[in-house]
Image (cartoon, rainbow, N blue to C red; front, side, top):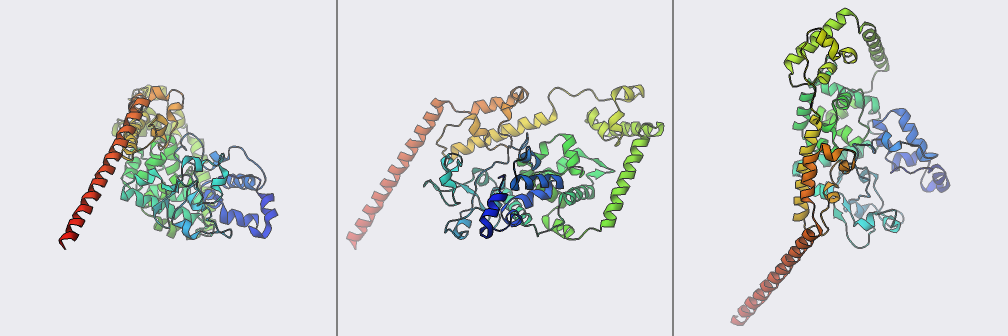
Length: 460
């Protein structure tokens, strides 16, 4: 995913591969990743690739960290592409479109991407089996289980996502669609829908809206809808951009309605003078807010807004109300000041956060569905906790500190669906008996058919 010190190697190969710039443009994921990260981070990625290792690079491009477990690094391939993607060596080559962590489908052929057996997929131990995209030990290529479990509507969304990422890998496609443009498009789309008003995000309405879009399944898979209120608001307000391309594309497309409308707007070049004027206006407004943040008029105004929000949204916590009471209010509207002003303040939240409750529900639903799927698919291995959690967007969540205590009901369900050795053997024996009975039934059917045919021949 992130090779390093490739500059000397590329220069040594010379015309066989092209210049360093051409390799980056045509063979790497950098053209896609650079659209969603600041320019200075793009420079770090390029320097890592050309010169030498840079620390923390995976986090900079959104492929490491607490909420990145859903995006797995796998050597995926499309069985249809393998028939046509033949290199000068006579072997199928890898497509960078299929190597982006988190992609499930081939956008060109609209089919799930495939993997060989686990042994063939282990590059570090069996490097000869990853020499080209079509090579394996004879095990064959199997479609991703995550893709085959999707409904037709969910699969259609994943295919559209694959098409979009393939286009964005082309550096000549929408050259103005960069980090700043993504932030602006996300903010403008949220404001147009009424989810962002006067710089304040309507959290409940925003989450409810995103759950009704066709991209809901993709947003759930990437964990964006489970983010805390601060990060969630920062992304939709355009203060930050999601660094991983897949959730960033999912958010902006869900808000805009479709990718075509984003293409039309991004194809229009921005007027530099207008952008400079907007930037200067924001700077002036920021300075004004800081200077007047604690004036008596501003304090009274923020307290009044807090009271109105408290009456309109009784379910919100004090922290949520304070954040929505004004840009400067979040820094000084504490409980003591509000109590002195005679304002009704929500009680402190319970120990278990709302996000934990939602996470428990997601985990329980995932474990039950995963267990049901493995048994239906006649999974030959023992169904362990790791197997059940492998396709969850945070597969190692129960290994984090105190998570078993916080998500107790979900962990109980996980243990209940984990097979013991005896249960596994019993299930395998039942599978073998069923297969044996099926073979006997097929043999009896074939014998009966042959006898019937023989009798008919004799009559004739």
